[in-house]
View: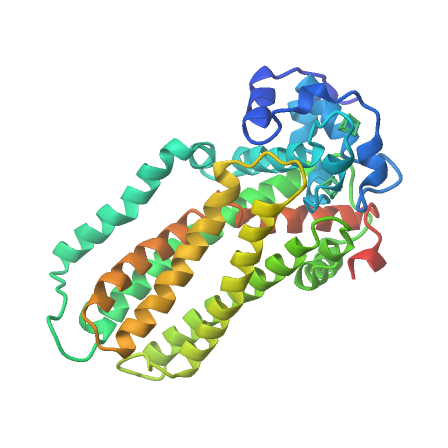
Length: 374
Ligand code: SF4
Ligand code: SF4
């Protein structure tokens, strides 16, 4: 065995890792008695080396190295069937969620951001950053809110300024997300070399993500499938609307974004999809019979997205009514959008990327059959 493999296979108990898993949802993991009922009832667990029983014992033993390189945690879709059936109420589904949270914060770049972000007491700091930046920009560029007249957001903040800020924050988020999840992929694929090439496996995985195929296999908590798919496609519509808006201004030379233009119609469609998705998710969580430990981290992305959608709707209505308050809502909306994009590498949004890379790897080694993915 090489020195590298010896290091990889070493059994090192890490107490701080166990504390993290407990803190982020795995509070009851120590009562697990390894009966394996959870692995039997899980609709997504494979026959060989199944989950989540092994993750339960690894977590109890603090086997950080194993868990941080365990792609199986991303095969779990958080349906909660295992937690419902667990005779010890150890909530294995919540432990799997906690492991994903800890994994993302471990691989995220820069790591201190990932670690800080999962703690609610850093939220005021993360909220203050865009507010302070906005105030600085406001005074540096001598911006002012028009006192009356038709509402055009560009007469408050020039589109060039908004787009420049969007590009800078977007590049940071894409780099951070890409680097973190790619680092994770390299780590999980280091020992067991893939049989297939990355691209074909990634293409199959992309199909499963777009169609939510694995999600639909869950027996329990099926409403999560609907909320997830609505939010997912609503989010894509919002991204598309932003892109079209930038084209209209910078390529087609529009002076203002039209109230009933293509960009707005697609944006509205996104909002119409996301809002019921969020409502289903909230009602589902509030009324769920599945035993579950929820944390601030589980709610952050959903709550922020809800605020972005609500301010988005509000500023459109206020703009249509030519109300000056539209400018204030617009400023709040921009701050919220900044938070959504800039902190996406550390929030639940990042899970889409980590899950994608993990499932791609699992498909490439044959742990997830291709026909199941596609
Ligand atoms: S988590 Fe529950 S069901 Fe799973 S092995 Fe432990 S005690 Fe059994
Ligand atoms: S939450 Fe659902 S998918 Fe995840 S391990 Fe439990 S039964 Fe399996």
